[in-house]
Image 1: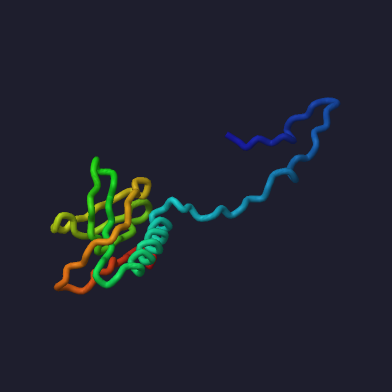
Image 2: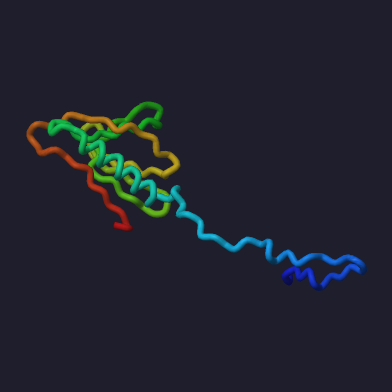
Length: 131
């Protein structure tokens, strides 16, 4: 199939104007904020801000809210897996747990949980392919 060329068609008595100047130039579109790396950067900002607001006796907990009930995780690491996954590692009910989540499913509550008295305050680690 060949491209359409309007100059191949002539119509007696009809003169079509040149419309090529009306076609807009291509533009650079902004980055897609729905990719995991963009979501990761936004989450990291909010989590660090929340973490910094806590007193020394509390650390960040994340309450995931779409399992039919709420699941509280004491998150130790959040990892970005391009292009659309985030991986949360931490403790749920005193057991190690990993949640692999598509960015369209992100829906959670940042909360504070008391830290155990016999260990230092746990900070969330962030890792990404782009860092």
